[in-house]
Structures are given as C-alpha cells and as structure tokens.
Length: 383
Ligand SMILES: [Zn+2]
Image (cartoon, rainbow, N blue to C red):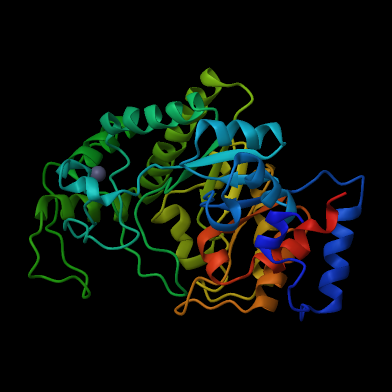
C-alpha cells in the first residue's frame, strides 16, 4: 500500500463531474511527446499534511499529483535537495515594494499621492520604489535565497502602489514624495518652475487630511505638462530594479530563473493604469526577466476563465518570454471557485503559448479539497 497515495485519497475519490471535452483537452496537452513539459507548480507549498513526512514521502506526494515545481520560502535544505534530485524545481518569491509594515520604521518609504497626502495603510499600498537606499536590502534577500539553493526567484509587488485584485480598482497615483520629485527632476533634467499655481483638490480628496501643498502643486504641474516623461521615469525605476535583480541572480547562479508576478492589465485598460499608476511596463521588464507570471485570479477580478488564456497570449506577445500564469483555486467562502470552474481555469492557463501554470495557493487548494481535480488534470501525463 502506498501510504502517500492513500493520504491523497486518489483511489477513493468521487467521480469527477468534468466536462468530457476538458478531459480530452487535458490529455492532449500532456501526452504530445513533441511538446515540452509545462511547469506545474504549487505556490505557497508547505511540506505538511498529505505532503509531509520524510523528504521521500513529500516527493512521492508531489509526483502523485503530477507537480514538477513548487514555490516556497521555507523548505529545509534536506527537502530542497530531495525535491531537486527528483526533478522537482524549487522556486521562491521575494516581495519587493509591497511591505507597508516598514513605514513605521522607515517613514520615508511611505508613498505620497498626487494630492500631497501620505498613502493610506490599505491593501495594495506598499513602498516608495525610488528610495534606492532600500534596494540592497531586497537584493541581499534575493541573493540569500540563491545561496540556499533555490532554482529561481519570482519578484512580487514589482511596481508602484495600487490595489488591483477587484473588478473596478480605485487607483491613486503615487509617488510624489520629496525624494521622488527630486530624483525625477535630476533624472529627466526637468526643473520645476520657481512659482507654481496652487494645487486644487480632486472632488474625491478629503480636505481634512494633512497635506503637503507644495508637493501637490508639483504633482499637478508634472501631470499637466510632463506626463509622458513621468510615466517613462517611473517605469524605468521599476525596470532598473529588475535589471539589478537579474545581475544579482546571475552572479550567484547563471542557471537560476528570474520570474515576475505581474498585474494582469493590458496597456489600454483602466486608462492605461498599468503604466500610469503601477508603472509596470512589460516591454521594459522583458529585457531582464526570464519568465512572466501574470496573476490571473479570474474570480477576484470578476472575469471568465477564458480571460486566462487570452491574457497569457497577450503577455507572450508583449514580452516574447515564457509565460507561466498563476491562477486561483477556491479561496474560501468569500471567493468561491467551483470544482468545474477550477478545472476549466487550469486548462485555460495551459493553453498555448502558455508554458506552465502556478496554483495560488497550496493551503487553499487543500482546504477546498481541489487537489484531486488538479491531480486528474496534471497526472494525465505521468508515465
Ligand atoms: Zn516617493
């Protein structure tokens, strides 16, 4: 009796209610010997429960599932080596500009809006990316992960602030702090006029908040007169970080992979917010990244599963790089994804030109008991 198999309950699972066409599609995808094996990864992987036990048992459980990669930040050296010996790639994630808990210790890292207000402590609000004194700290963390033996690093929150995981995102432009304004001026050679018209507030702005009127006036002047230079400047800052990340990575291990978790907005959506607000320009980032992973959480973004395949195709066209989308499983009572929809999402994510799929996330997958569905789609290829 294979203990792992029993733990995963594959033998005793209930019949799947998948559409027959999905099954055929899945088998076709995984059985063509001419097609390179797509990456099949779990994000947030932990060697616990059905995936726990000895390293050999963990390997067996992942093989049983049909996974050939995991994303984790906390694996023992022994397990990491055992996974790699079994041809399971081990990747890790580094949060670049997303940790707003650092505002307390480093107030300069808190972004300022175009209204001259400090950014509210809300989800999706992170750090001011132009504070380059902070960068070595992240690059060091990245280097340490490679020293620990990971096969690659994915950069998360590699952008300016903004909460995007919803149907109609509320977006505020940042960052117009003193440091960023000075850096913009220095980098572009654009000098602020000695006298600027006073900033007028947007109707939505709350006039009771503390406000830096000088910075708000400068922001208004930039957005009225130098919007394209501003857009270019901010997206260059992000691209420059990715360039440095790639250099750090190559110095440690020339074979390591640099991936990016990118926001799933096309250039013309939401008034070009991917460029104007988040400053994440795929066309600049493709120079330095090896793999693009658009975060195609269809339910969070109120989209159909077909959007996943369409966006993968868009990303491949924009970047000419391998695309491994990350998709969601059922995430609990606020974010239900039915079993059939999850199966359809997995297959949509693997539609060519996709070269893999990452499941967000391992814990939720286990809680929603969607492992068996994933296993039936992924393990069709196992010989
Ligand atoms: Zn700033």
